[in-house]
Length: 455
Length: 55
Image (cartoon, rainbow over all chains, first blue to last red; front, side):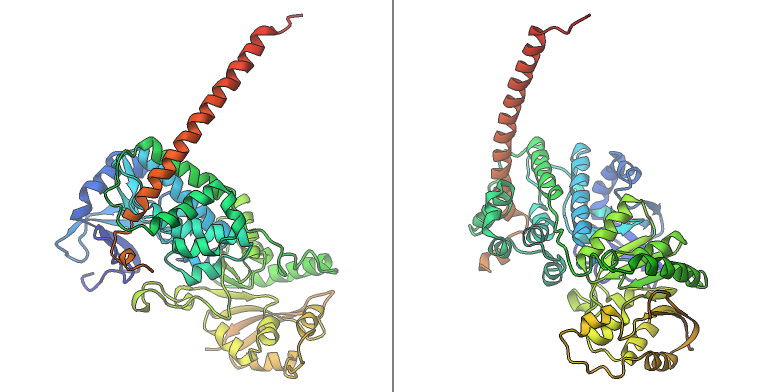
């Protein structure tokens, strides 16, 4: 295994690093972190957090994979099937990741440790729930000091949540613009005036903004205590628990508002169930998942589903359902297919693009093509080519021009879509796929296809 | 961005605000406790004055 190197995103912390080797992710613990790591284990904090499913479980491996001089220990964590990034999470996911981080800080201070950083990149979603993945973030707690990661916590959790809460807007634009957190002065400028009336917001945003303009108060570390820190963490927890960005959007009642919805949905459900049975493999990517009605259908059939929609409210709803119903095999994510997550971070290789990360056995694209073709003028050939890149099986729906939803899209647009026909759709997709099944959904003119990739 | 912000340790800038917030929260908790004590004192007193009926 000697030709492996550390993960390109794993350079910030001298305590250790992530190490991809033999198809798995390992974590090397360096000698410099030895005393903290031993305390994490000895204090019982590690096993406690793992039992409560707050910290990703790991095994200790005694192999020095890179033969490095700094090596103390190698950890083999439970593998996360799909790595998602905070700019792909909905509001509720970021909120839960924030609450998880605070909960871990509370438990840690009880055991004499604390988190030295507080970034959402230390959290992943596994089995429908957030879990803390960075075992090397814990350090020995000094009760005389405030929390070293407080500012980072505010910038990367509290501020985007507050902005989204007060404006009732999607959280993605904030997360995409500030992948490492929103500076306090920007947050203070963008929050509405009425937010100042909330004492919590005033303290954590406006007071912090005022004080941050004063240079150098590093000497001021007097008289902090465990009790004070506990109050501070509880206060943050209380503020975040009350935040939401619920707002009715054009997509959130897509199915409930449709007149013929019940009959149509029932029939569609039957057909999809039948098509799902014909797929090989267990991994399914649901593109344009809306509130995940069909993702849940697939999950009930034991598929591991990554459900994507650009609408933050739809994904919020799906995520809440996943939580309530304890569904472990759906990962809901917010992403716009017209602008999927790019490779980003230093040298463009800290965080990989969505296309590079996703590995799936099948793609399901229901009621999606008309949005891409008519909403965004994408030619069928481009859509076929994009879907061809994901996997060898495709369940896809064609919604004809006469459909009320397509008419809605065309209402304020010049109809330049003479090629938007079922025949043309089939001809173009046949250049990349074989159509193995074709079913018309009763009570509509919509057609569902099962396609296999041509090799 | 002010130039000095680029050179200070990311954590240090937030110490002062935490000290102040913790102090504010300490006062809030102190008064909350007093209020709770007064409340529980009176509710206990009320219970003492009106003993529960046996019959």
